[in-house]
Image (cartoon, rainbow, N blue to C red; front, side, top):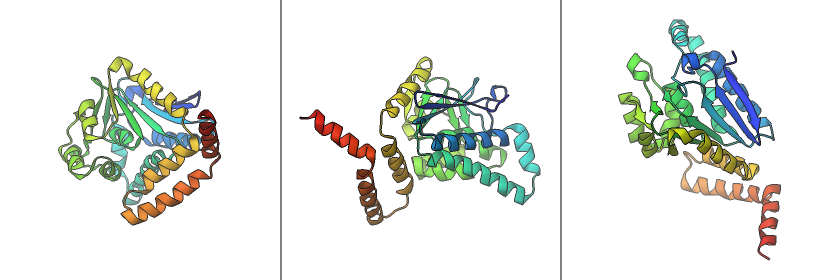
Length: 254
């Protein structure tokens, strides 16, 4: 069975983690498949938005048990290489030129919570979704995703999540800023695809440049950020989407 299902319809590229019997737990095959799919999404001009979801009762329950056993027996070099592949997959989602929407209907735990963290926008089921970084319970740490988590929700809230290893509800996750929207369970899929359809109507080049800025501005001083913003503003003005959009807007007001 393929670990990741892919469909493209009307500009929406849906990636479905397809290990329902394992609660879509991460293993090397799924990590590699996610990385390849994000590369495909980035390169395909027909893709305007990516939706990431899980088959079965969970979004993603973290690392596969067999995978955990494997990493506990690997050499330091093997673990460093394996960690680098996990990091590269997360970073590929972050740097994808297309918006990535996470649709969380069940548990998103440990690495699964990391996947939700690196999505641009997350919608979650009010009753069914759960979020948590459980790593410290087994002597592990959420090292890679912590880099993204700190940027997303700040130090105080990140400390609370990763040190307590407590699972939180969708409503709590939304209050923390970890996710964007909480919707009734029965409406999750329709709400997710309404959001995706809305994004497909935006300029692809403008969303790409906006994502580049959102990624790059972290850590810049005010002065450096403003200089960067000026250069990106000028760049956006030269795109065909901007020129066409301005012409269309001006013609509609005359």
